[in-house]
Image (cartoon, rainbow, N blue to C red; front, side, top):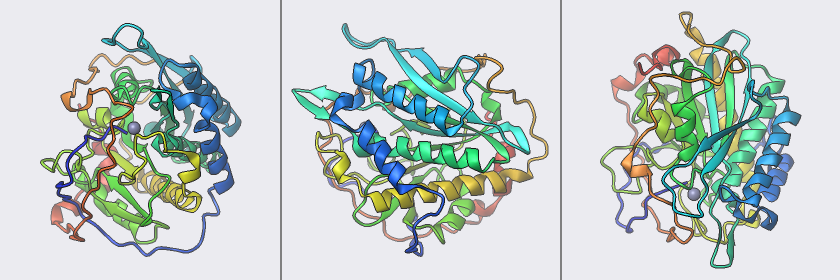
Length: 377
Ligand SMILES: [Zn+2]
């Protein structure tokens, strides 16, 4: 996660909603497996998973093996999708590697839900290891659990599961993926991005994206009503204080920049954000499992409610080619190209939402068509 550092005066403009918090754990999500994945990825042996390091490669090897064990299909070129990193200083990595797997849809295999979580983090700085348990071993563990669930319960749409590299260097892996996608961008219905979903003392998980794509709001609200966490819409209002608007803060941004809808799930910052203390012991396993179950329900709803799309066409099998969309651009969002510093976060606090609920009629329009309207060009 790359959230701009701000002062404490940020104003939170959002639609906060109080969900009915359930007390039952998920039958679909294996919380022990989640905890194991976090403990492996955030272990000292992974040395903070900085792009281009041995620890990063070890994390990638683990994810790759988990993809295979889950039964995800690779691309024709395999699970690994390397990309160049340009413009770095001497000694910095010139290459990153995304990890991509797929589940083919039963009804509309040519329409893709793209589920993403970055696996890189800040590495070692000044002798201190930044293990990044919440940022973002928690999201990768969630991605792996969702992949296992999707293989067991074949979706109607196809799903790409992507573990991105080089997020902390400026969303580089996600930009490369969107610029040269394995399936046509016009066939990507939505990006669901997981980044920092492992802990929150208030039991709150934010979902950003509906301010940009209000047609998704009813679907999100349908999840909120029974979600096993307090699911709050927000952190996506343009014009908010820097740091409060997370639109450009993680790997969903390159998708949004080309008009592909996104839903980003993550928690508000905590004291260990971008600090060496973001360790596995500070993950809250029960909250983490509830967050992933919430994600599972969201993806299930997207898969079902997007299913009115009878006109979808143009997609191709991700295994067929490496994909080179001629219209793709690399993305040049100046707001997201800053290098994350290992000592960057200052543990700032944000004001909480005011509970205002947006009920504008524009939000209920056309949501059932989102799968059709996703194509940006
Ligand atoms: Zn981060």
